[in-house]
Image (cartoon, rainbow, N blue to C red):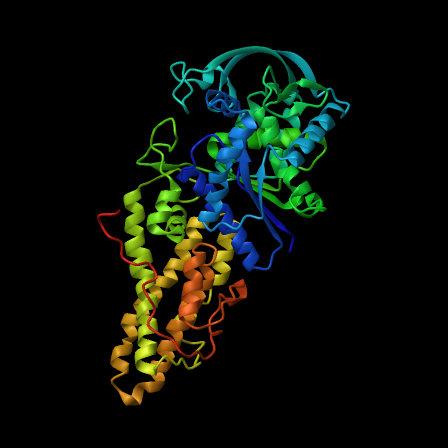
Length: 508
């Protein structure tokens, strides 16, 4: 099994973390955790982009050097994955010395490739500082950037350019040869259509701006932020582990997760830059839609920020992860609301899963003094219910169907709740002649919950561990455990505390 390398985009350090940033981080962590459960060598990268023009401007307004300002606010971004229970292997900052050295080498490789891919010219045109992107009139709506509702600035300066136009043919060949290079397919069509429309060379440097990575052959200019930030996916592998270069191990299998608003940079500019520098292109790019808040994109400029850390304080990280994975089909645009988070917390996490655990453990404690007998029945309803789950969820997650895979687990959760009602253990406990039947029912409920806990580990890591602990079964969450009949005898099972306690209505 080849290694698995998954990345989020590096987030712009001067913006406020919001649920849209958490959305991609959670998705990447779900994929990484699942691959680790399957025993796969996995590496998960996230981090921050610090060399934007906006960082320098805000730092100047506060009387700080850009590096000092970035150092002050970097902590909240480092806290975000930790608070989301995301287990990233490395957190990159574009101000890291290792990254800066690699970017300079990367750009020098392009300049030295013998194809005249980098040349000097004058850039005159519109630039949106909010997007850190050059704009044409066709990109604007009523003269404004549609993402930031503001007028781009006019910039005229001598820069170094990358000859993107020379890579139009090679990019089209790439998309033809690898239909799954960009997913979902309609996003690949969008990128391909952009390429077919004709590619324009773009500036890879900025003049008169000291904040950034100096161009190695022209230190009076610094690398344009997108010629710097994109390179992090490779540069991190050269210094994430001291004394090791992980490029050969992980790069051929990299999967980039990104939102649709940066599709052009990742799906067109990035593979062209890699080809020019002599590197393999990524294995795959998955472009997801926006998690809209009441049908509007979440952004600072629109004033509808939802702070994921506030939501975690109230509902817990597992509930936020569940809401992000469940509310919108991953890959599509979709609208969510904080009210929807509360509803899913109470209805699905509290009632469906939490009550199932509470009822099961309470019945084992009451009817069997906390002792579980190992009486698996491969022909039972629960055996048939959970049997295909492992393969189904693995296949869906391999296809980035995070939402569908979680729904597949929830089908089993609902099925176990139906089994409680249909088997009525409380009635069996009244009949001494049906003790063996009661043992089988209790075993199936505990074993079914164990299977669910292992299958949910990538989605709800804290709840998964709590369920396994309450059932007094092995804490092992390897994917082989998503199978019926692996629970042995257990003892000292007590009625579990609420997995997702009821919240005070007034505080929500």
